[in-house]
Amino acid sequence: MSNSDSFIDEVTEELRRDKAMGYLRRYGWIAVLAVTLIVGGTAWNEWRKASDRASAEAFGDAVLAALDNDAAQDRVRALAQVPTTGAQGGLVQLLSSGELLEEDRAAALAALQAASEDVTLPVAYRQLATLKRIIAGGSDIPLEEREQLLAGLAQPGQPMRPIALEQTALLQLEQGNRETAIEILTDLLSQSDVSDALRRRATQLIVALGGQVSG
Image 1: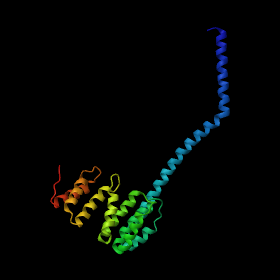
Image 2: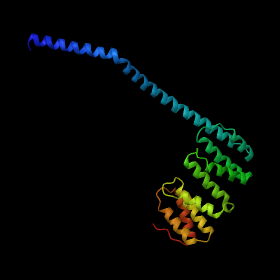
Image 3: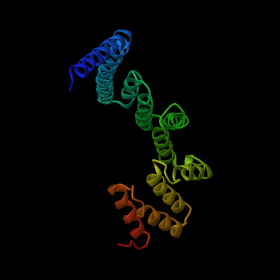
Image 4: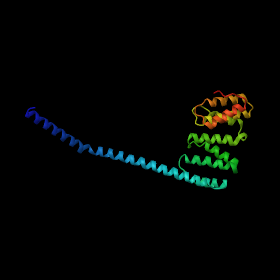
């Protein structure tokens, strides 16, 4: 390489450095801000996770302390005083309704219905409240209403579908429809998202009704 070529390369490299420094002086604050936001965002996420974990633990401790009371009325009163946020309120409603069943069945059923219709609660909580109301209410809830509610819960993709199918079969038995109940229970056993306990109950009921379980 000639001296002139070397000189040109050095000048070109120097110009590149000067240009880069100019860009850095003009736009360097953007890079600094981006780094700050990334680091700050990471720190915020960690703080939020720790805060959520602490809040959940405090809620759990408060619920356990409330349920530690001897009398059902005391447990209900203590649960009502537990601070809640978001879906925690729905969980407290469900727990309170379970306690009320021992003391005031009508109030418990009303609380369960309120929870099942509360659109601010997660779908799973609302469906669980509906199932608890159907099971606890029994014949006090009109047959057509129970059938309609269970039909909605038993649709494919619904989180409470397996239990809803079991209750639908029991509702058919209540009406004397043994064969229909066996068909529903057999369909239930074919589902992949059925718990072991529910699978055992369905199997035992099919056998008790005179049906056959394949496999």
